[in-house]
Image 1: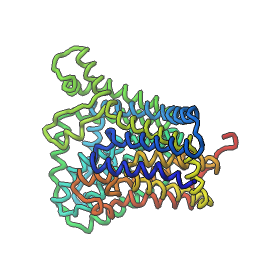
Image 2: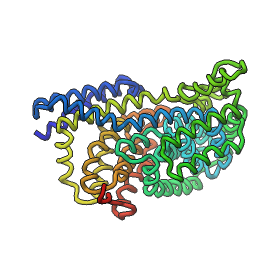
Image 3: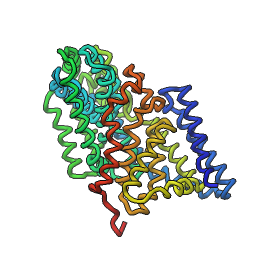
Length: 473
């Protein structure tokens, strides 16, 4: 009877395979959501057939699951707004501009990894980082004589480091919210496994850089010049991320930090980048209403600023709040699926099979990491991996007395970073297509992505910062 718990997953996997075959990288625009709803229906049918599932219980579980994700939905909308205001105000371009100045030929691989990490950390998107600055660096690296695998590995390692730790990343927000961990608590806890993996990665790229041929890199200068001529670049703009960092350090609520960071950036944009605001408003007419229109569009709509360089145009383009709606839609549908699994008793059946192999902290974390990698392979989507992995292990961690942040970190260590290593996963499919480098070609050089799951298990084995719930919790 318990084997029926695998039926909804079998249906979901089959539908996702069809979705990816038909829609490709556009699967998240709606096809995945439809697959989740169909799989939810299978859960309901199994529940009726085996346990006489009550409709009121089903509604209650789904309502509860969706309600628990309300904070993450609000945060995602604020992330869309802050990504627009920080870009148009020149904050992110300024940080990228100065970051490019440190690149030197003999340190190309190291600097490529660091630069992609910086950009991804600032914009919260590994996909955008790889598709913009990553593509530019790939072309430059080829001219210098580096192999595609090494360059792509450095790009992806840096991009996913930033994506994993950025408070603007949808996967980071998703993992923290699904597991019930405060956003910045989740980010700080990930440092214990992420920093060691990244340091080892940087050491490897540093050594590799000195053993390969390098020469001058003029492409970076052109890219930096495009930023300088499009935006007003000044070190004073760096005060905004500094103020944001101070708010984070003082552990202000993430909603408050994101809202204030958006508001400050919007004001800065009006003062420092009035031409860019007018360009977004689609008019050069002066006046308060026109400037107001430009700022509001920056927050909620996609923005496109012309720099004269196609790759740079793509980098400075933003999605706004509207660009977050496919992810919001996916979260809601995934929570419906999780609620149906719970109400039908299938989640409990599935976890009863997993619990048999769990003995202590190491086996618990290893099981979580292994299961999220399995979900990345079978469901072919990192968002589903985080949601389903978190939903399945949440009760086990709590019953064993572990804090939720251990679960949220384990899901990211196993789920977020390994998605790009699966050729048919939406991440692997996207990055290999954008870079023009096959997944299996760059896989051996994505050291950060390969080391993160190992680091997660190693830290658990050492017992470093593994805390139990307080008695009152």
